[in-house]
Amino acid sequence: MTPADDFADSAPSLAERAYQVLEDKLVRLELPPGAVVSEGQLIQMTGLGRTPVREAMQRLAQQELFHVMPRKGLLVTPVSLPGILHVLEARKPLERVIVYRAALNARDEQRSGLAAIARDLAIAHDKFDDFIRLDMALGDLLDTCSGNLYASAAAAPLRSHCRRFWYFHRHRMQLPDAISAQSKMARLIARRDTVGAQKASDAVIAVVERLAATIDRFG
Image 1: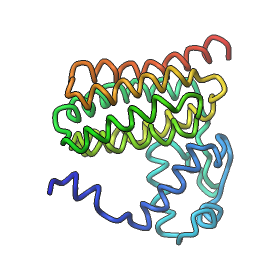
Image 2: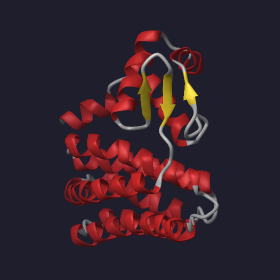
Image 3: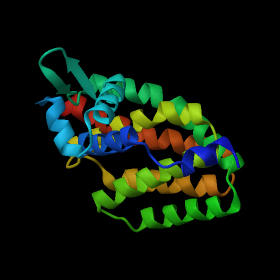
Image 4: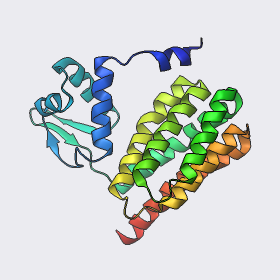
């Protein structure tokens, strides 16, 4: 068993559970950008204790999803154009590493899983929630296939920022373009096409860049 297998199979700690709940609420805008929340509210929201919630808060603050305001609470980071451009600049090379390693290392059953996600994406059409679910599943599978825990750990919060950006601008997003790009990337990785997979990964990032460009142009 590889370190990646150990990581994937381990049961989440209470702090990890708190993180997962809060990260999901941040991405889905249930914790609205610009809102100020207290530690007590987050404890109630997660149903977990002070210590795991505090650990999750610190982790999310390090990932720039919260801003800690001493004696005032936590500010949910606003969704901004400069912010997403910085995210994309950092994410692009990391995803190229991950998809390259995944195309090289994926086992046969993992390649079948990638092909299945590609098929499910192809029939998602205009179903935004299905797309987000499959995008998350694809990212998790690629991380496992790549075996590079460092690249995956660095990319994870950047993906969260991108998904939050999609939620915030979902009515402006060209969803068919995003679905097509993700589906093509998954197919190429399944086929062991390392060069094509990296180009397709760039195309996935380009979808978000085009969305950002429309916001820059039209506000």
